[in-house]
Image (cartoon, rainbow, N blue to C red; front, side, top):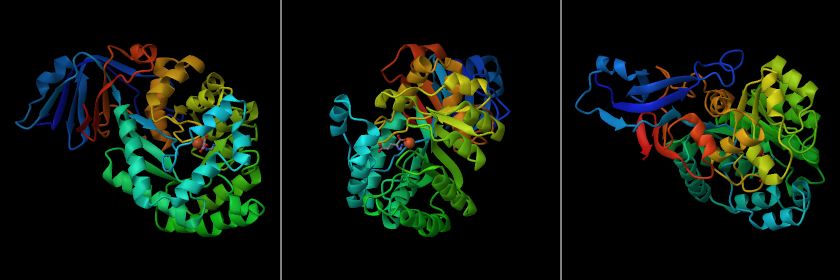
Length: 416
Ligand code: NIG
Ligand code: FE
């Protein structure tokens, strides 16, 4: 191998899952560890990985950038497969209401929660949404995230949903992070349709979905299937309509009430079902049979003071588990997937190896990108994190601080 653009040497331990396929492939927690390793990169793609003794086979060019990892841990860049990145206005006032005992769905019913963010997002310009998004993407990147999914869903009319998706497109273009777009016009029923949900669903299905698909503004279609929001049959109808236009289904399933969302996700062939706090045994079985990925969001359980999803049961059922921040201004105001990794380890009792699989290969699969990202292997995109940690256990043990040292995106150093 000659003349790489980048060589990372003196890696104390390289930890990565392997392969492209978590469903029926790489098992949760099956990771490869290489001690005293190196990685070579050319044109943004990994061209060599191995232990230091094989470095003799690499000839450096004049322009090769050499990074000394200082004997530290290296992992794939983190992938956050569920965020509500596009919004205007934080909701810090809701914290004291919550502390007084008011529930998330009560706040929403009063016109607060998602609906108050909708009012602010509608007022915001495209430029404001892009500038807010930039700030959050910078924070994600600093914490090791190199790809994230981003949902619309605070516009809730054609014009403002298109504006939100345009903001995602612009962020993907101008920020180093890759941002994967999801259309979520079915995030809530907007106030003006409170008495006429049917008409809002018609608007989603007949006007929003065809336009989003025509303009190629999203890859996925997501629905908040929840009591007082969209029920099972409404969610099915919206997801099937999305599918007919080429949008892959995803679902907010069984987050606050057991609605049968997990089973629905399996039935419509969703790529992933998300949250799953109250998923039933039947729902879990259906997901395992259908090959649906579980995207779990322990930061949301922590922040809402809700129960935690049955991660161990879901893993033991053979379902690939991915983890995400659910970053949004209400139920999970954090950009840090690192914090979510800590919560998953301690509250779900997932091992460090299982969590690493969940935030790399499995989360890449949950955004349909497992053939290009999520592992450190020859041929994959060079999205890499160097940690200020001697081994994998350390990042789960020393918590609450940012342990990311260097982030490399497509072979370029973007955080150091
Ligand atoms: O995943 N559940 C719906 N959407 C978000 C919350 C959004 C908000 O509160 O603004 C969630 O928890
Ligand atoms: Fe969410």
